[in-house]
Image 1: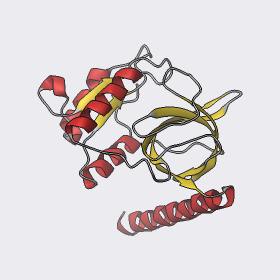
Image 2: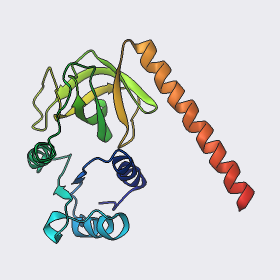
Image 3: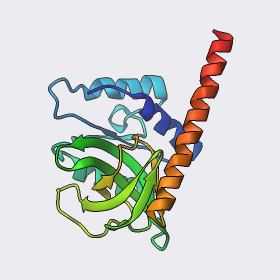
Length: 206
């Protein structure tokens, strides 16, 4: 377990800017070095996300994306929070959502965990997430069962990305591979411009 990583901090910032309720998945609990209590302490002391079991209002679920442990509980808690907040997804729009995990697998390539927030994701769809794009080749639910349709609030693992997107990236549907590639390239150019600007600023004031 790697503790609170920079992309997690960015996801927290994004959720706060959107005034959205957070549900935290603490991943990799299958590892021997896993220390979920340390992660919770970091989230509480450094980022103001206090777990419910400590008297706070943030739902935190210890999961393993590798083994599937507690992913059903994570889904249940996400649905519960959505119900309590009276959140309603729009199903009659192109699919969009968030990248919640991404890794490479031999023989499968990029395997990306997605949480669909609106619309329906299906095999054959072109999508872009940050600087990465691809076409949905396969979809599997948290049990590893192949599915043909992923609707709102449904977490799925998909294959088909050309490269790995980043945790917390939003994904959206593109009309074609060309459009997806262009959107990803545009995001990459913007990312490089921002990195160059930050580097110049650092050199100026260092």
